[in-house]
Amino acid sequence: MALISDTQPWKDLKAHVDDINQTHLRDLLTDDNRCQSMLVDFDDILLDYSRQQATPETIQKLFQLAEAASLKEKINRMYSGEHINSTEDRSVLHVALRASRDAVIQSDGKNVVPEVWKVLDQIQEFSERVRNGSWVGATGKPLKDVVAIGIGGSFLGPLFVHTALQTDPEAIESARGRQLRFLANVDPIDVARNITGLNPETTLVVVVSKTFTTAETMLNARTLREWISSALGPSAVAKHMVAVSTNLTLVEKFGIDPNNAFAFWDWVGGRYSVCSAVGVLPLSLQYGFSVIEKFLRGASSIDQHFYSQPFEKNIPVLLGLLSIWNVSFLGYPARVSMESNGKGVSIDGVPLPFEAGEIDFGEPGTNGQHSFYQLIHQGRVIPCDFIGVVKSQQPVFLKGEVVSNHDELMSNFFAQPDALAYGKTADQLQKENVSPHLISHKTFSGNRPSLSLLLPSLNAYNIGQLLAIYEHRIAVEGFIWGINSFDQWGVELGKSLATQVRKQLNASRTKGEPVQGFNFSTSTMLTRYLQASSD
Ligand code: F6P
View 1 (cartoon, rainbow, N blue to C red):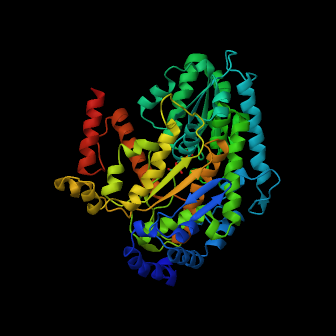
View 2 (cartoon, rainbow, N blue to C red; view 1 turned 45 degrees about the horizontal axis):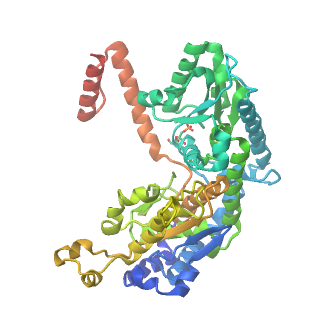
View 3 (cartoon, helix red, strand yellow; view 1 turned 135 degrees about the horizontal axis):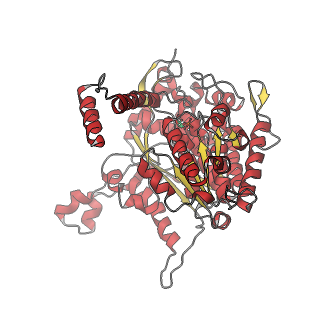
């Protein structure tokens, strides 16, 4: 099976690295025509990728690579519901989760949009009843707090949206008097932290699990079921626990009334599920359905953009291609900015002779500057995404200060990309009369790539757009690398080894069986753990 690395455009890009290594961003940034061609404006979002180590020629070569990888055809196949997640024989249709009510999106010959809206309507009705107090707990009190239990994709996406919405005035207003907490980790400390200060009488627990079998989530769900039933009696569970899952049979078996279960479907990857009931239910309980509907509309606007725009104006496509350029050609292994890339084989199972994934990390605003920016300025070259917003929703203007707090933050948004691109030469430092012994310490090589995304604001709509841009970027990368971005077999090995350990702990504790079948190191640690924890 042919790998993308065997194609001519890949080889051309490899050869082109030498040309790029002769350039410096300091010089590339003097070419206004180049910079102008590296701006994309869509729906008040501005993407500026002029600080990438790339010329218009690089971008053309990347488009040729996209063509060789049949990127447009693959995007179309995703939108038309083909089983592009071939290892699990599934469609990949998270775009249907935010499609308008009248859209038609088929999976296995069936339009899935009506089912999506049926669940959205169910969420709207339920969340309104909880919020307006017509759905009450077992003792007749309104449920003002929600604990969402879930892990991985059933946690991180909703947490991202929740975090981002916490400063939006409309969201703040609609969340007044309510709390949303997330319980993911199985560490009992996390359980304690999550329920501290909560009263079971006024708490609703949402168990979020695609499979309804994930060990950590199910243990946390049993723990909170016990917390509720020991305080209010077992019959209270029906009023205080609801579920989000594709596995409604297991939901019922767990003891949650199927009428209080919110479905989603196997064509929604766990890591792409925030726009399903996974995110929409807990977030609507906290912020109201109308706010979350705006989030869905934002994501949908990017879905249409991604589907319809030519590559040169297509933000997720450009972001994806630039990632490929940085990872597979320039050899930068990390990026400052959840996903399922990072595979060792192609979608056909052929070992890859190149890395197909990067290490992502990031930090809000200037916190990054005061922690790991030293590394990105003078240490390793790590391409950065800077994401800024034009209007702060919580502006602060202090008397006597020349710039607002938001301007202060944004000064860094504008300055850092240039600091990375230009660096500082020994010559400049000499002219500034820097002591000779400090010159090498204060020299910055520059030529460090970044891109900037400027959003109008951080309201629910823009948060939806941001999410969809990054979701589609992952898909673009995977389509080009020729890997499956929608499965995650790599995570399974850890899960099965944990099951083996769990069995051993159980056997040792209940039947006194000795630790066996593990290597020296694990056996020693396990034995010690068993002995010390039973003292
Ligand atoms: O292990 C990874 C993963 O399968 C994610 O894809 C998923 O989001 C998470 O575990 C939780 O799975 P579930 O939603 O089935 O509990």
